[in-house]
Image 1 (cartoon, helix red, strand yellow):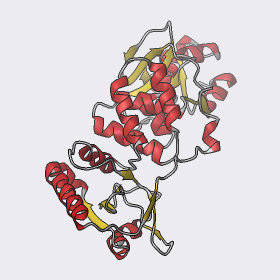
Image 2 (cartoon, one colour):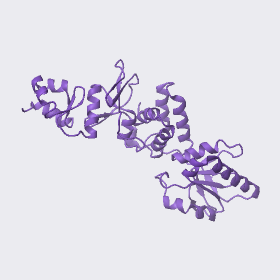
Image 3 (cartoon, one colour):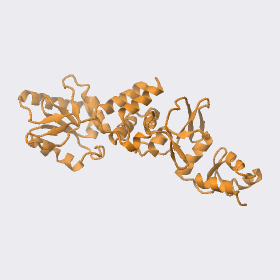
Image 4 (cartoon, helix red, strand yellow):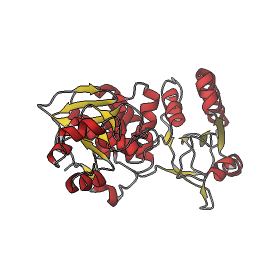
Length: 330
């Protein structure tokens, strides 16, 4: 049984996934539908078929999710964040889809369809897929991820990799209203403080609980007495010239040279900087003990009465790439 040309053309555009309504509108008879389903075609979702019997690809599942949600739907939240390239999200289930109100929210098998009244969002078309803009996707995903540490990792990754600006994330937090705003604003605040990884954020949160440590700088630009640029520490206490380094290759910011971080102790120590190293494992296992080490080192440096002849300058906010600016809400 040959399919009508319109069905073949649409099938090629939608990588072999069509809805029942699309097939009927393209001239496929109900008899053909009944015959082919289960024999030649695979049912993916209610009223949505893959024109094959094999396991569908991820892209086919994404197209199917859009079809079951409706013509005016778009991929959003954790799904959109993963499609935009954020590694802190995956294209697993459920697939997140938004539809405009007054349509209703519902769960259809492995598809989470949510109705929204926030419609001023530029939707990016990628072949057969419609993908929500990244700033909204990050905010929605951070709200959807149950574990706050994983949500923090997503926000930090998006900012650190210069995919989004903090004020664009703030726009969507405001647009959402009160739903989850306390948690979202806390995550944005941590990213704004300059943390470039989850362990750095954990370290900053820990330092802020101290009753004796002053407010630190994060990832400042350091210059030695001879004008040489020094390794940028994760945390810097300018009053005593003390650096705290998170020593982890896995979590270190991709924009920094890992080899330089490994030798940072000698680099900074040569400039008479007090260096304290911590690891993510130690922060997780014994946070109070690590805070005590930092407090003790800071107190010792203060009692010494000497400070490294190093100039620290706060790092400027990262510029926003022009290529991504087109995807932002206006």
